[in-house]
Image (cartoon, helix red, strand yellow):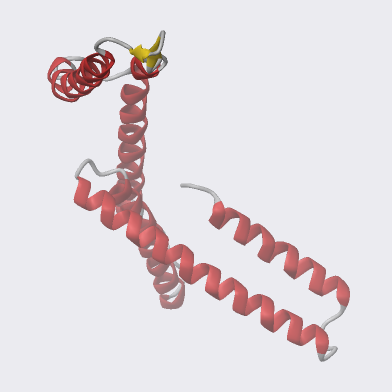
Length: 175
């Protein structure tokens, strides 16, 4: 606004050059630059002591809650003792517990406070989504091939495609 106002001063006034127009433009540019530099230096210094906004506090509380609930879930799975009928069921139960605990440990990494752990967890999430989408596309292509060769009916095709669509939609959601 300052520079636009100064540039609106006419070049000529009554056939002669407007007195000190160049000086006005120079002063206006100086004021603009000085205010930008002061804002870049002074504002960060002034904002150091200000507390976080309520949104930041809430986000931190949510992260802490997720972290604590994941820790509680892992602890509950560690102390859980199932009474398996046979060795095969015991092995299956151990594998399922390990898989579920792995998901909760990943959740702990996502809600970790360190920037490195969060970056690694974010990279893992992106890679997992990409791999899952690739697998879903392969399933979809195989499903179309089965339908094309009349190995499945249209109703089965629609049902399985619906499930694949739901899986893909869930991958699109932010965790």
